[in-house]
Length: 224
Length: 265
Image (cartoon, rainbow over all chains, first blue to last red; front, side, top):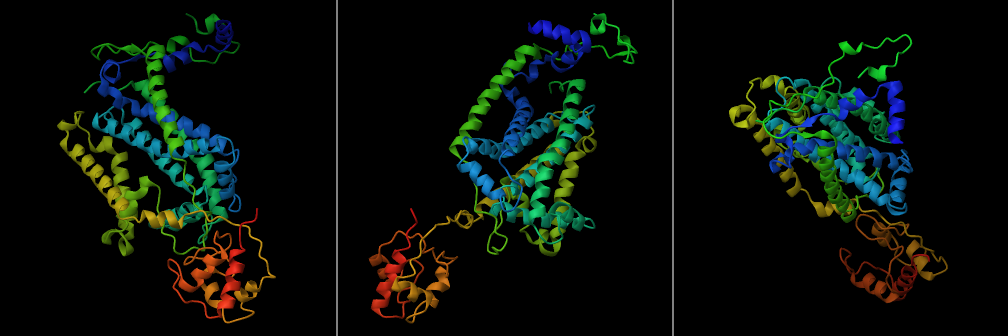
């Protein structure tokens, strides 16, 4: 049955080559922990992606309850945390995932650095990877404000002051982020929500696609 | 095999099959040893690693519910801010003399900027073909130095932070609904309508009975009238003894009023 559906689609869209591009390749011995246990260091990139997928899914469910408004943001998070069935789990996964993704990405970066895998011909993929790192930091910074509790507000105040200390364009960055030259308030919350949920994920998806296409094209770097 | 199983498309503008990059798996013969097919053998192992990781992740989630402090209050001027843990090293860096105050730009922009740009441009700074860390001592040394400083700064930030105060300042204050019985004689004393009292109680415990930075809320207390009377005379915790200036009878009435402020059922 599945085969027939596959054949029907394949006859019209020629999907077999696409499938081959994604899945049909060999995994060399030196990255396979089944052969060398120390090769577990090659798992960090995959685990980063795994957590990213969990962040996307749990984030989608969080927006079903979250209200990006200074009156109701905290109340909606409190309600989600204490009243909604499994709300504590969904928010907990998003909260801890935000930290774990930083840890895993950090370890992945160190693996690539210490195996010298960023060298020719993989320079571009390294730069895209550093871009992903920056986007993830941005997601962490913007997401921290959204529960609209005390630590969120005051950490964001400090963060925006740091952004404002950039020479020449600091004030412009501040107004862009906060929505106002002096107030961290309603406008800031909606902007951070939009950046966290729409702008940065859009950039992230583009960079991730580039990262993965380049890995498939170049293959994984050889043993040391 | 022909593309699309040999089907002809009307107005076919696609790149001809023979111009396409060959769809042959990469040659891994340069890698010694046993290769393994990604699909499905290796992917199954990856899923097992993922499953084990997910169990740990869920245990963490269940064992440590994500924190939520009280609702943001921009009028609070005493709050000591703290960023998420992975920004702590920058937070600590900004406390040092030549990275703060007039030199703020150095700590906030110049140093993180140099570090980020060096990371981004790593392939063009370290251009030797050598891959082993021991064969390229300078990049390795710089990276280890950076890691050590990040670890040290994070550590310093953690040990120098007052976590007790941090926990206290963020606590969610319960809003307790209480019924205030204004017919009690103690209410008049609290309000300052009769007797000498009122001002000094309200100074710390607030006119709305909800307390303040120096004193707990009286609304929703769990004390009996005798206990309240004792505290009025003898103090408790940060509250000094002998604050009440009225008569003993008035103290008794005030204690009865305060003891009546129980949470509504």
